[in-house]
Image (cartoon, rainbow, N blue to C red; front, top):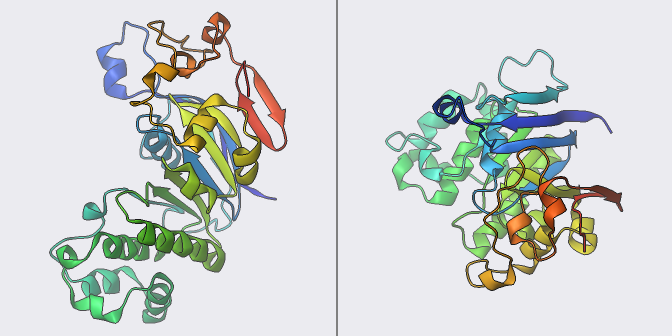
Length: 295
């Protein structure tokens, strides 16, 4: 399959942190991330809050500038006048103007009435919503209108940041089906971030497990669930609550080596001193695992 996106050994540190500590050793938020994304695939990125998921999305989309490594895109539409990458942010309150009519927002976004009608049908945006003001929409309705604006420019890569957060199970299922339709009917490649690996499993072709700004495990979605070998992937799948099960993990005051150590060291029951120095890369069953003591 053709590759749309290639990420090679990227690192990211906030500029303000670098400036503030310019004479000190600083730890990047994103550390040595590498992966490839094929046309038409869905990549799910999972991990707890603070694992670096949203930062990684912003680096990929160009909102933030990485300090090391390479990010390469191979777009099909070479002369696209708009940005071929579009991102749906997590906060639905900021997706559309809260004091404008939905109809005005959408009519000025689309170049043709036909295309607007097609997207509204796809996203189940009713004509009755056109007369509503932005603040009168529910969170789910705002997401759909925000998605419509994004899809109006016909992006090749759609990035979704926690699209299922603060939704009830029925709404989550509805949006899962919606994103599947968008992928299949519009031939769009998708990166979707979520803390809920079970939801991502239903949407993604491949899953990237992120912790402490590093990849713990990456591979085929179903095989990640059934044949995973990393303790952190197992933690996410089992749905353990770290706050309630803190005794299940070793507590360590030692910091991880900035270049090579395992970010999961202090949380892992199987870790040893060598995990502070390096992490082995294991390849098997369409899964790549970074762990010295795999399951």
